[in-house]
Every structure is written in C-alpha cells, then in structure tokens.
Image (cartoon, rainbow, N blue to C red; front, top):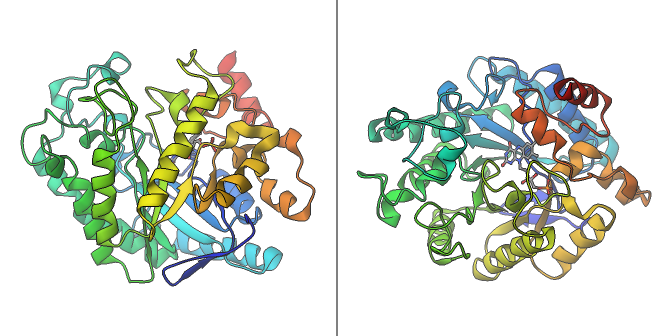
Length: 398
Ligand SMILES: Cc1cc2nc3c(=O)[nH]c(=O)nc-3n(C[C@H](O)[C@H](O)[C@H](O)COP(=O)(O)O)c2cc1C
C-alpha cells in the first residue's frame, strides 16, 4: 500500500511515504538554505517519497531556536523558489512524479534563543530556568496571525504545495494549549488556550489559494500531567476530550492533513521518538510508546474521516520498518506514514524498497546522536552513517 497514491483535496500525493520535518540547524543566518541544507533536501528529492515535509521554519527572528533555523522572507524567497524547482526536476527525472512539498511554520516559544514562554511551568523550568519577564504579552501574541499569513503567502509563492501551522513538541502554540493558569485572552478556558492556534490557521487559510494544503503537526498529547500538559489527565493518562474538540474545529475550518505527534522532546523525548539509547533511562519501554502512537492515530482517523492522517515515530523499528509501515496502512491506522530519523540515516530507504533492495542494516539505530548534535549547538544529521556528521559528533565528545 505504501506505493499507492492518495488524493487530498485537488492534490495527488504519489505514494504514502512522508519524510518528516527534521531540523538541521544548518541554514544561513538569513534563514535561507545553505549548501548543507540543500544537500539534505536533494537526498530527500532522490528518495522517492511522495511528501517531503520541510523542517521548522520560523515566522519571525525572535521565534527561532537557533541563529541557523530556516526562515523564509521576501528577500530570500528566490533561493527557495529555485531550489524547489531543482528538487521537482530531480524527482520527475528519476520517478516521473513531483513530490508534494510542505513547509512547517513555527514559533519556538520557550525554546527560542531568548525564551518566550506562555506561562511559568514548574516541570520544564527544572531544565531551562526563566523568569516572569520571559512571559509573552497578549499584545505580542496578537501580532502573530499576520506573521503566519505572510509566511504562508511567501511559501506558496516559493512553490510549496502546503503549509503546516505547527503546534507540537512544547513550542509556543503547544504550550499555550496548556496555559490553564494564564490570565487574559490566551489562557484559562479551552477557547482562550486554543485561540492563537486557531487564529493563525484561519489567517493562513485566508492568505493562501484554495489549492494550498492546510496542514498541522500537532502534539495530540504532551504526556505531561494536567494542568501542565495538554491532552492528559492529572494522572498523566491520555485524555482525548480537548484534542477531539480542537481537531473538530480545525476540520470545520478546512484542515486537510494532520501530522500526528506526541510529547515534548525537551522533557519526555522517549514519548516523541522511541529510542534504543538516549540521554536518560525512559520510564517506559519503546513498545509502550509505539502503541501510544497507534492508539492516537487510529482514534483520530476513526473520528475524522475527511482528514488525511500522518503517522509518526516509526524509526525505532529498524529491520521491521517497512513491514510495520505497510501494516499501519492496511490496518487503517493512518493514511500516510512518516519517517523521521530513518531518512537522515538511510535517505534511499524508500527508493531501495521500491526497487526490492531495501537494506535493513542501513536503518536508523535510534541512538539519539542526531539530537545530541543539535543540543550541542551543532548542525544536525546522522552521526552514524554520514561521515560529515560522524566527524562533528566525535568533536563534541572530545
Ligand atoms: C534531529 C531532529 C530534528 C527534528 N526536527 C523536527 C522539526 O523541525 N519539526 C518537527 O515537527 N519535528 C522534528 N523532529 C521530530 C521528527 O520529525 C519525528 O517526529 C521524530 O524523530 C520521531 O519520528 P522517527 O521515529 O521516525 O524519528 C526532529 C527530530 C530529530 C531527531
């Protein structure tokens, strides 16, 4: 089933393989693509994936996680436009189709270079201390829908087929969803906590042509106990009440694709990307995390039949990767299968699979070295199979 196309609105996605957004922290300081960024996306174009979901792209300089985060502006738009044309040409030549290209728009909130937080969070602040001065004002938040709309317009001009209004992994919109104790228009009630996210989606929708895919990557649950997490109970159990409400509003607004994710990699990384080796001993085994993904994806797919659902978190499977991806599709758990760390480790995994020469030994080891590079302030990539990143990784370990 992986090789079958799927129609979303007027768009045909040539197969069910999604290359998930994987930030490289390697753009030029104006946010445009550096040779390293381009090399990564050329590998993506050669992979045969039907949908390439570009990494986090900040809507404003103060919303960047690092000075080399992607950012699209009127000035650097020609770089993106020319490069997307190159990617399409490559894919057309090798596979005979254009991949669908989506840009992820983001504001990094608490993880910005200077933290911009929704509210004081006792659990997250154990790791990165902040003060009340880091709390963003309502007046600042009011300015963001216009910035999202402008970035979305630029994305369409650059040639992207869709935009993602990102709300996941503890970044600004995701944190607002659990701002139960924030006063004012953006805190307290569900309507207030989801206001900015919905306003930005509406602003983006109004700014782009009908053919543009409206998408979001949502941490359906933070897996952080209420009142410090979204989509959970006080006992930190999954609670779909508010996620269901939120998604139903987004579907009414015309959301086309929901890329499901879960957790906050700065706080509970095992939830977001089940791994074999990482910075700490997770309180659950990877199969618990993998089952959680499936429960969430199936729940959403069953309730929102008009939505195309992208599944996440599969790279842990290694040898079993493609079999599991096929299973998720045939069992109706999701409509498209997302591969994150996999495509950094083994960019040709799908091309090889199509050709019947998939090589399991090249798949991601789920060792977290790509994240370690990022957290060390370096550019990020696979430090196991790619010699450039391997060398960098050795340097940070010295
Ligand atoms: C180095 C690195 C960079 C990432 N960058 C992004 C990003 O820009 N946007 C995003 O939504 N998720 C990002 N993620 C999360 C992945 O897209 C994906 O959800 C996660 O790795 C789990 O999927 P996997 O098991 O296939 O790797 C990143 C993860 C890693 C390890």
